[in-house]
Length: 61
View (cartoon, rainbow, N blue to C red):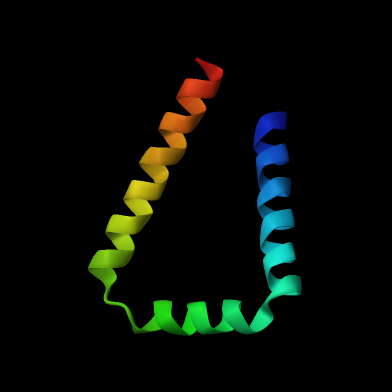
């Protein structure tokens, strides 16, 4: 459970730094995402989740 809290904290740090360093780029990226149809979003979400699971599996072995 503590690993989950650490992972969520790291996610918040990374997102916060991105918004602080380049808020305009984040805004443009969100606007571009808003224009995408659902299918590419689902595919990229699934690919990201699978890569994340594989990464955790390799590290935790």
